[in-house]
Figure 1: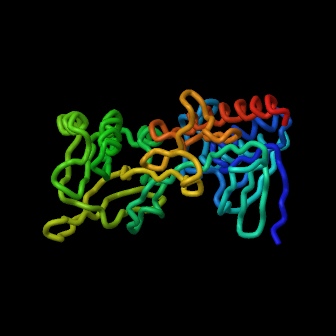
Figure 2: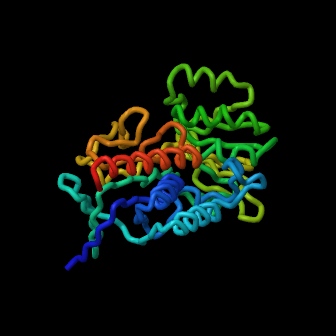
Figure 3: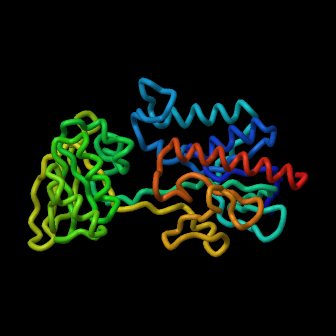
Length: 313
């Protein structure tokens, strides 16, 4: 039989949003419980050097940054549990969360489950993630100054990434499986008129070549019409085929947009269910940065603290 423990605040997820929320709620003496899966730290754990997080002038490794944030939260009294929540009950108070072998209850719930980038699923991609393969141009573009950069995708996100990367790359190659982009007309025009961007039509990557020592050296492309393959030399590959918010746990329970992102109240992290707050990439499909996630984590913590105080909890 499942055992149940009660907490004033439970935080789901341990990326920048969740750990920032943990720091703030712990400092408010709310003794939050952080529940995260077997790979804590969110998307930053797949990033090598982080150069755009304030306070680290020489940069910091992504996993190291997340470890320091967790230590900071624990210093103020936050607890962590490694488990996978499989269902939630938000209709009655206190809220109840269940995993395969345990249950927890809480007065306030902060959701910071993040989003997962979609990957190509080809050889070399996973092995070279952080060594020339990336899903975030804003995060990693500056590492590839005067290099040959490939962007994979055909939507607005891919076009935005390609345009942004022209600030750094010598040449940017936009690879798409068809002979026209899916992006909005204005974004297509901006991209195709950029002299530093070259479209590579009717092509799909089937393998990324390189090592963690050398970094990415080339991509094997397959022609979608003829089936022929060729090696395309590049120094970096940015996969821009979208993200999936980790919100399936709340489907039918909390409101979300057509892409599955949770939709809190404007200028807030409050969800329509009183006592539930959403922060980080699970509710942000625009910025998706560690620093903005941390900012919304702070917002969620402050709003949760004020809500608990108003309710006498």
